[in-house]
Structures are given as structure tokens and as C-alpha cells.
Image 1: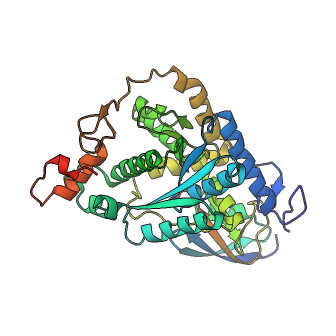
Image 2 (image 1 turned 90 degrees about the vertical axis):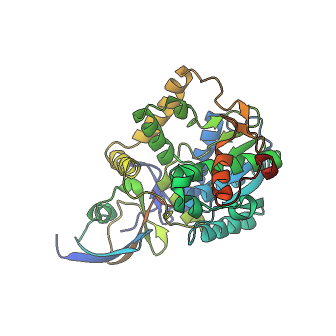
Image 3 (image 1 turned 180 degrees about the vertical axis):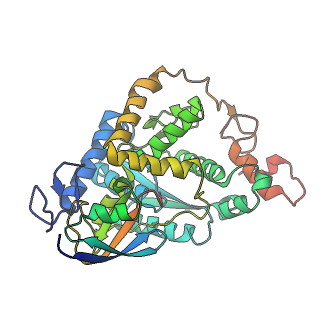
Length: 71
Length: 319
């Protein structure tokens, strides 16, 4: 593994923001795990669009929407 | 490295299920709607339903419900929308706004019922004065919503009311009912409950899709929805703990919730002897079904609206 990727993650609702550094080649599911959340309980957005959790993480911003909210 | 839709090669938004094919926005929406259609068929949710009241809060689930029903059955079933302004400050207004935007975008006829205007109280008041009301706020809110949904369904002659309860909700409520030994409540968690007198039939077309799936669906549709936590929702206690536990369990045992819920509905519920209809009496205040002389809704309303005033004969509160 060479180097790392930095991401800025916003969690909604709540608006918590986390700056994370992950090993290059990490998956979106790794972001979710680092936040202490379950993949089954969230939808991760990149530029407003959902992304599959096994997609490789790219540098930049992600939004994590919590499914157990706002019924 | 982006994932591509297994069907068309467009950019993928999600997988159909863990380990299953990748889908783009368009194919995800179709996949979601197929799942809803399969639930409707499996449990015969629309049998005898020509006019359907769709309860839309403006949150992700009910917005998903409205769009899926409209796309799948909009040409066969008359949809009437209902949104209730519960009077929760900072929360209700954007919710009602989101619901209205969806009704209008789809051209669905709808009604907005304002709790304060039509019944003289709000959920915020019920919360502030919960000692007087003698019920937790979430319980009051549930009673209020069920009462208004049923009243409006009768008013507009709807054959059933559709709600946005999803698999997360139903598997969570199922477990809580079992844990707390509330067998009668368990029966009410079926995908369809039949009409009983003036209690209109209730259907839950999202019973087999998860909150994650409804959320993905409304995002890919670009439908407006309000994604916030209700300020009255408890952040601690059994419910949020069980909810987080079920999500974690789903990660390690995919499809666990669907398996548990469908098995309970198919194999356990039919073996539960239905109690002699609980709500066989008629509320002396409003004439709706009640389990005693006065229905739960009117008991709450009278406590809130009448406190501080001289008691008025209940008959004068009719209507």
C-alpha cells in the first residue's frame, strides 16, 4: 500500500463532520466502519449521488445519510 | 475505479443486494419499484382497493411510498395524499412542505390537516404537558396520526390507508412486541390489516424494503424529502439500541430482517388467536371506534384542550 487518501465526511442528520485519512485502495465501506456505523444503516453520497460501498475511496468529500432517521 | 451498472454500463449507485448486480440510478429505481410491486402482490395489498389514501409525512419513506405507488398503480388506483402538520417547531413545517412538493409534482390530489387548527393542540404541547396527558410523546403522536388517517380515509371514502413503514421499522417493532410480550400489537404489524367497522384497512407496501433502500430510491429520483430527526424522538433507550443492533446484524447476516419479518408474518401471525375486537365500542365524543367510552385521541385532546378551562359537557365538543 502506497500512501493514503484524505476525505472529508459529513453525516446527516446532525451535520457531524470528520476528516479521515485512509490507506490508498480503501473502500467506501471503510469510511462507514471508521465512523462506527453499519453499512446497512447508511447511504453514502459522492457529489449528491449514492455510491456502492465496495467502490474505492477517492480523495475529497463524501456525505453519509443515516437511514434510521426522518421516517 | 467506478462501479458500472451491470445492465447498461452507466455509473452504478448501489448493488441490488450484497453480492448482487450493480445498478445505475434508472435501473435502481426500477428494481426498487419491482420489490414494492412484489410485496403488493405477495400480500394482496390492493385487493378491493380503488381509492387509496397515502399518508405522507415528507420523510424519505413516505415520499418513496408515494412515488412508487404512483408509478406502479397511478393509472389503476385513485391516490389521495394526506399530510398532517403535527405542530412540532422547526420540524413539521419543512416536512409538510416536502410532502406538498411531491403531491404537486405528481399531480396527486391531497389534504393537509393541521392539528392545531382542526383539533386545538400540537405535539409540542402534548410533550410540554405530558404529565397531564399521561402518555409519552411518541405514543401521543402515533395515536394522533392513526386517528387522523382513519378520519380522513372515511371522509374521502378511501378503501385503505397506505403508510411508509419499512422493513427496519417493522422488524424493530416486531422484536420489541415479542420482547415485551405484546402479542396483540404483533398482529397489527402485518403488511395489511383488514377493515373492522369504522377502522379502515391499513396497508404497508414498503414492508419488505429497508430504510437504506427507500433512502437510495428517493435520492436517485431527486424527490424532495426532509431528512431530520424528530426533536421528540428518544436518542437513548431500547428502541435506538435495538435499531443499531439490527443494522449491525444485517451487515453480518444479510437479509436477516426480511427473513425474520416474513417468517413471522407467514408462520406466526396466523397462529395467534385474534383477541375479540378490542375497539368494539364507539367514542361518545367523536363517534369513532374506541376501546372504552372515549377513544384515546379524544382523551388526549380533552386533557389538553379542556385543562385550565371550565369543563364543558363533552357533547359540546363534538365535531
